[in-house]
Amino acid sequence: MFNGFSHSVMGASHERRGIVCQDSSAFEVGNGYAAVVVADGHGSKKHFRSNVGSACATEAALETIKKFYADPDAFDENMRTGHKRIIRNIEKQVISLWNEKVLAHLDAHPVTQDELSKFSYEEFEEIPHESYYGTTLIAAVAGRGYTFGFQIGDGSLVAVFEDGETSMIMDYEESNPANITSSMCNANAASMFDQFYVDNKRLLAICVSTDGLYTSFGSDYDFLDYHTIIASQLTNVDGFITSLKNNMVKRSHYGTEDDISLACVYDVELAQEKHDVIKAKVIENKRLAAERKAKLLGR
Image (cartoon, rainbow, N blue to C red; front, side, top):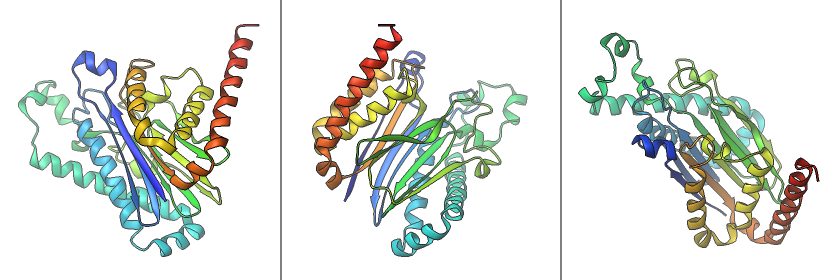
């Protein structure tokens, strides 16, 4: 049985500038699967509705995944024989549904005079409607005996396995300037996704996060160790979630001072069964971190 959580916090730079949180995050435990999604709306001028765009992206991803799992047994069988094709189809349908959602929002909420005032007439006429809502997206799905995911734009995906080992299954993609980054709003967005599929791995947890979390750490080691700590607390999520949210707020003042989103799903029974293993891994990680620090200081 899977459970999960998700949370988004506003970055310090957005607080200072009076900008809304442009991140969105969500999770869903469905019939035969558990899914996590995060989206990071672009901050540049022409993406002035990116907070709505990121919310539409997480909704579109979860709705599409649920649709594909209408028959879980058939989906499982098809994934094991043609996962690349199926994941590509999911990506295409997510893009299509996202476009439907943002254009429906635009139809219901036409561009305001205040929004128009930021542009010259010529500038505004050159912006495609979808670009108002530009956003990244990361989604991961834990199925029955396999895990898959897809990503467009920056952000991170970390898997935690039953032995406490962690892995950034898809390499962190460094953020590009907002006007050229891989984005849901690009005309060729469906061809810009990265994807992964892992079979026959016993997964304890999988987490996705926007780039504000990654940039708050000094190294990949520290970033991955953070996820091991999260895994060690999954036997008491209700007691842990408040401290996690507080930590995310603090971290939103580090790095790029960007918004931060984190979403996680985890195997409840496996988290309990492997609790001592994960706690031992946390202790080992602390020791290794101290050794790295001492070496860096030349001791």
